[in-house]
Image: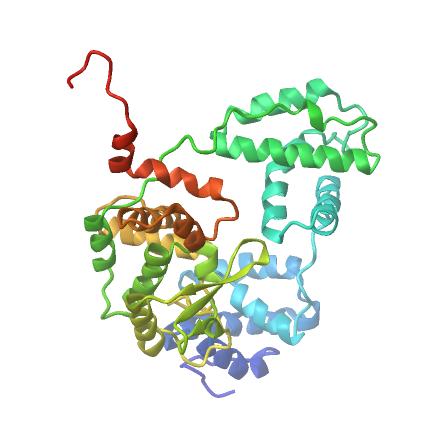
Length: 402
């Protein structure tokens, strides 16, 4: 066939080349990057023709042979992502078989049953279930025998205590608290399912952790200014990052809430944002003027056009897709480093929003409404930030200056 992007493609995959190029361009690949991906298709197609392998027979053994016999000799095609974009496209069309699903171990099968219990019986969110599974996976894995079976029949209180003590030594206190909570939940599930013959959740010890013992570490005004000014608004990255930072520092939004923000969640007429928070809760927040201006600039000049997703914030580099919560974290960390503040996380900007409201005299009840706390107790930690009011309550030290 004729050249596409300067690449000549022949063999059984040649007919898919034009569509593959269109797919690459549609998700933001520049011509040079798309040409590299197309050369991968050309190499694979010629290799299949030479080896007389039908595309419908391409599975992991054949792909491994291709990587070792053909790609290993072409340095220019050793790119990040490898065959992932190409295989995703061909598998989406049914041109090559779907990837073989690895056989699940007995540990993962048991954890799958536990996940269904959390989602269906306990009604937790998918994110919470994922966090619980990550915490208890080491415990379940520790019960796996050499033959792959999970030994639960012989589980004793000493086994549970021994695991907790060993595991907590390598965790910070907040992580250890989550781990013991998840472990109690797992042990209740195992007892309900009849996989252990006695309730062992009660033998899991508590972690010494006082919820309001810390002090929120927000940024001061100069640090916030430096953080925002670190964004070069003459670039697409800078426009996007400024809008993200303002949502975090002005409205105290969580990183997941920013990542889940969709175009239809911005009510320009009323001046409100619809926020998709924890536990599938949907609430409304006012849209401050500077936040609205930053969003307008990004949506007008920075957000890619022609993309199918309705997510507000997108990756700048190909493949174009919605930013994930870890992506939001990377934006904040990068801005903090540019501003000379070190590693700053999204939650620290949430503390900053609350501390600034408190400094301006807002009562804790209003701060709790902005941060969408479910209980007043969660908001009371910010009372410790108002040092001027706390000084009025402090008693003089005996024997000190009057």
